[in-house]
Image 1 (cartoon, rainbow, N blue to C red):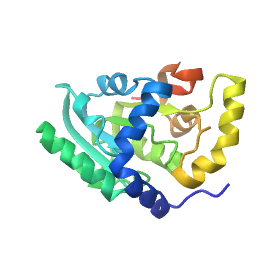
Image 2 (tube, one colour):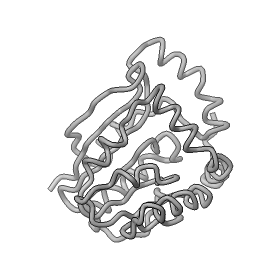
Image 3 (cartoon, helix red, strand yellow):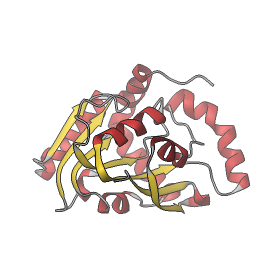
Length: 210
């Protein structure tokens, strides 16, 4: 199964940008559940959101967050996010075109890294997780929601059968477990919950050791 390049992934999301909110909204209601509010409720201080997409998380950021840097590889997705930020009057959001596998920010410069349904698409989640570790201050949080292997044997078999088409047409790896990437980068996993239909949704809170 061939991994799409970063350029191919950007093209896929550029194409889907006008309808992405409706597509993911339906999937979250029916399959994944509402993990976004939980994720953003854990964010504090200076935040980097990797693969910010159309900015669906932006309305949920509260007063505990001082500044949001959102990074995405798709210009069309960012256009939607920028319109959303303007509509919200969210002056503390800085939305940037970029690759989350190589983020142009200093070491130990943020307090929280946020990721919602991004590990499934990033070409090398290990590199992106290492970047998150580099950016965070000691004690900083990495909080994410992700879909991954179902807790059901039948569910995992169905996902395995669908994965080649999902990767080819949507750059979507259905069976990636985010936990090994976090631990491999040096994070300590504080909370891990499985939710969603057939347990396919991960809700994870981790931190960079002091």
